[in-house]
Image (cartoon, rainbow, N blue to C red; front, side, top):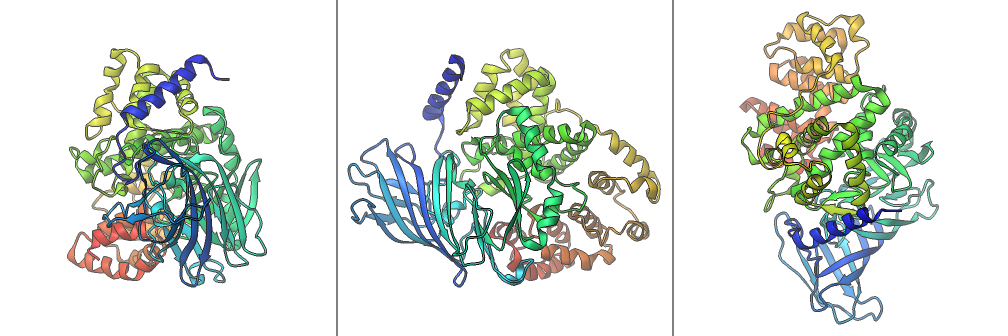
Amino acid sequence: MRTISAVLFIFSSLMFNLKATPPDPHSCSLPQQVVVQKVHLDLKVDFNQNILKGSAILDLQRADTMAPLWLDTRNLKILKIIDPQSGEICKYTLHPENQWLGSPLEIELKAGLTQVRIEYEASPEAAALQWLSPEQTLGKQHPFLFSQSQAILARSWMPIQDSPGVRFRFDATVQVPPGMMALMSAENPQKKSPDGKYSFKMNQPIPAYLMSLAVGDFEYKKIGRNTGVYAEPRALEAAAWEFSEMQDMLDAAENLYGAYQWEQYDVLLLPPSFPFGGMENPRITYATPTILAGDRSLVSLIAHELAHSWSGNLVTNATWNDFWLNEGFTVYFERRIMEALKGKPYADMLELLGWQDVHHTIEDFGKDSPSTCLKLKLDGKDPDDGMNDIAYEKGYFFLRTIENLVGREAFDAFLKRHFTANAFQSLNTETFLQQLYQYLLISEEDRNAIQVEKWVYQPGMPDNAPQPKAELFDKVSEQLTQDLPDAGIAKAWSTHEWLHYLRHLPEDISLARMEKMDNQFGFTQSGNSEILAEWFMLAFKRNYQPAYEAAERFIIQTGRRKFIVPLYKELAKTPKGKMLARSIYAKARPNYHFVARATLDDLLGA
């Protein structure tokens, strides 16, 4: 039972959002006039034509009884819009396409109409969807489909108010070919349906970017009380072993910041073309196979996506300008989970690697670039431009600065209140800061000590950022003075220790030394994607030719942007390297998701 003060807190937050939250610059919808409350999907997955077709019935709440319904669409073919009660046709206008926003759909609403049915088809080139042939899967027998709706790509496979500030419930019926399974960010099946027909329900309200659909030859394996993994049959056992700590992670997360609100937590292992490490779709995280290292050393990514069940899915950034509210909180939460499971020395390594990453990103952008502010100004731009280490790591170090000042106990109490009082709501940065000042940094002295405004609204990394240290890395650094690390010592290193070692090798390292290291430790043929990416980066910088063939193979087979974009960038720094990069990209591009292609087309002038 909530206290009176908590109820007043929620009420004041809602009123503040209603009055002060600006429109979402990345959505054409006007939810303050007419808002979608629930979606009923009826879809057929056609692998012959690579299209989704069917209908969406939208339940509406109308604050302005004279206003039309505005929806976001992108390359959707609108077939018909009707009143599902009377069957009467609704008049609509599909407005001209905008580069980032797609084509706004304006639907006239007669008096009293609170539901519309939209019959439509999604294009084979729908930006959110990747259609894979059987040859591109592990099993080689069935095709594969998966979605990636974040940031504003849900509109490419369903007509919706595609803003993180708009939440709705949904149910769905999806027809797929027999022998295949369909999964959504909802209550999911654990066995295949003989006729290929699946029903879904999501009772908690979610924003459109968390809508997901995957279809393939999946099997399911239970991990713990309310956790499990889906994968193609050939990868199921390896994935279940790698993710065996999922239940422990979920239990640790609940101990930190309160009950898990989504009942079930599962992971779906996707093909290598998936452009991200993971995607936090409610109830079912999508994960890249590049985290299957064989030693559980990369599962902090699962902790990160799980943490999104609180920071992001439960309490959501209101616009993509506030993206740090999702990711900075999630990185902080992820590292607290890993500290609970693996101990502080392990979490310290993650923190220091994050420190290295964010400083590299700031160096890339330039320390005075507005792109290094936490609060972004992405109006007129693709919100995908804001998805970098600034939101993740600068956001994390801002929260760590606050924790250092007020103490962990007080900060944990504030975060628990944050997740409870703002549950199933969307916040902008200004609303969060108002709550921060009201409930934690109450005195002007504390605010000045943190330099809140500087952290949020100014570029670069403030000088009061915590300076991370990692004892385990100190021991690694001792080995850098030698031509080769001691094999007995290095044998016990985790992935994180190897990354620290590789990142701190001298910039002018000799090719002879690289060859000796490669012969001793097998970097070029490693099965660990993090180590491969770091090693290939060094190989491109030093023109270490023995690694080039394996690097090309890695780039073609891996669609994860975290790895391939920096490698293409490094390769393209010289005219000869750029020719090679374009040659590799020509082979790799058909295997990449739209999100990766959009970045690389621009980078390489393809």
